[in-house]
Amino acid sequence: MKNINKKKKFLVIVATHGDEAFSLPIIKGIKKKFPNDFDFIVGNPKALKENKRFIDVDLNRIAPGKEKSALYEEKRAREIMEESKNYSFVLDIHGTISDSDIFTIVTNPTPQNMFLVYSLPIKKIVIWGSTNNGRSTGPLSRFVDCGVGIECGPKDSTSVHKELENIFNTFVSKKNMIPGGNKELYQVFGSVKKDELGNINLKDFKEVKLNGQEFFPLLVNQYKDEGIVCYKLRKVDFYQKFSFPY
Ligand SMILES: [Zn+2]
Image 1 (tube, helix red, strand yellow):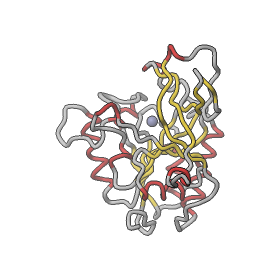
Image 2 (tube, helix red, strand yellow):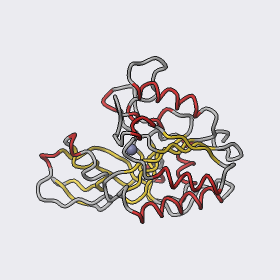
Image 3 (tube, protein in one colour):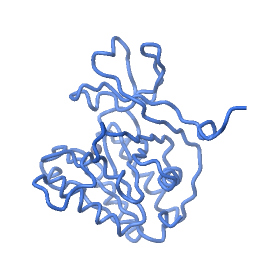
Image 4 (cartoon, helix red, strand yellow):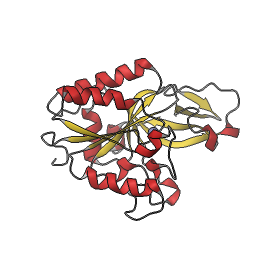
């Protein structure tokens, strides 16, 4: 698979959201130890300076971007798309207030992206192939040739920071990509709106039953200002998915 060639460098994007600065010092430290294996860029330097999620529009909803636009992030998304072409794959690091631990997000479920997440030392994988309400724009990782997101939560937790550091140390020092290990595969299939909830306590990846439906919550409270209590996950079994009944 030529898209997954670790002889070529890969690209890490930190602070795609300007209020997710936590990964910058971690990735800087890893880069010092392994200067030849990858490069990193700040996704949204303007928003990072202001400690805001974005300036004009969410950078991780506006890819693939436009060369000429009045919106800062729309131009920035296009720059990042161009930059990503020099690399074998892209890892886009995010942080959340949710108690989610660290998981990968596959926004474009292609075989090469599945190969990539199965090669990363991160157990939980979330496939999030949203149709984005019919919009043609979306997250950066959906539009690069090969790339996935890494979500870390809570983003201000020092143990989560340590874990992210360990993950990168393990991954970068291992010079070949071998998919496997013990993985848990999930798929986003909907969300819980504010008025649907009632008296249920939600925790990321802890299965609950709501209105007769079982699901695993994801990103609890992260998007509550937008009226979303959490996203709903179901487990995915590859064998089942590609097998016929008999
Ligand atoms: Zn983010």
